Image 1 (cartoon, rainbow, N blue to C red):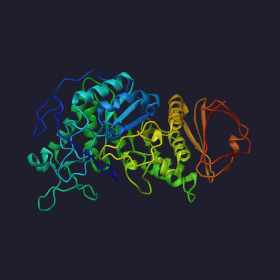
Image 2 (cartoon, rainbow, N blue to C red):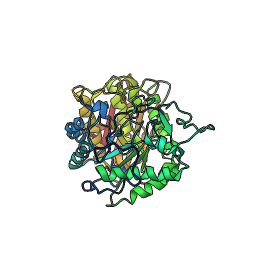
Image 3 (cartoon, one colour):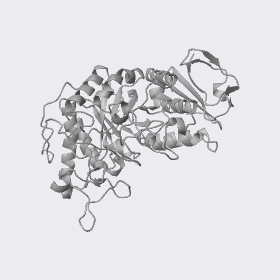
Image 4 (cartoon, rainbow, N blue to C red):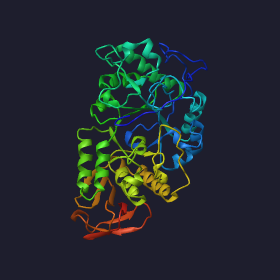
Length: 458
């Protein structure tokens, strides 16, 4: 959700065929499905994340339509998949958003059955990829059973009417009351249910900034103690650094994203990008990371200054790839949103089926494979110290970890520019990480429009 929107469907109770009017008191009291995935990346810096919008991912728009593309996702260099919400969608006041949850324990029949979901996750695990679930804890649909059975679980106005999230335009959902301890416990149990029922490896928590961090600390403590024991990935959609203290390993980097978008306009310089990175990592301890991206489902579904496809925001294929080269190689966990790797130019909706054309821009797919797989192999890019160099038009930075050094150069202008090579880099020799050609730096370096170079030490 964040500054964005939501989606819906029909109820199928997650573990049986009968419909339920309310959540059982303890949905965690079920056997563990499958064996907990043993290769979940223990170090957050080792994660390369890929977001799947079920409705757009295939012609069928369901779980089974995702499975044939798991090898393609893996080939990009991905080891963690984020599935957008899988729950039934409310029908009252609906905008057909998957973040409008009618039953936190159900599977949206539009996407398939619990068995189909299990098969998708098990297949991803067999290909050495973890799977995390997008979890909408802030609100429910207006026809969620909790509305009538537990009205005190919701925030209400002075007349006792349940309200939508204050300060938002999300009128399709009702705001939950996090001062209610019983509701909090039920929400935690519902989250844990999915670890047992489908063998999910963690959560991307929607609109996390709108929920008290003492709830997240309570929930994460419970999740981390689920048996059988496992490592659980926890990503907060929000920018509040307090999420790290609550137990999240990752939080969003929206300010950095905005800075990259702004950097590609003539009125901004690379320094704005460096400053945003420094601000987002101020006080962040080792093992915690920001999420780095050039699009998400929210940005790709709408128009506006910071919305649209990367192809439109960054002025075409060359600009989109240059923005990704900058973003993937900065400190943080790289995210790819399914559709950007094939250079989709149209908006990608998550409110209805909107199939992606996977047969376009094979050269972009190849470029993303090079970027992500080299990133994954480089200690410098995953954990190395960052040094940035000032230039009005060209991003220039190094990442260094021990003997491993990487130099990133990217022209953020749609015109040829000349980088004044920093004194510290003059006379150094490098190997292009993507094509193995060599480069010796002198005092200046000409770069074509949106050209990017990722170089490793000789």
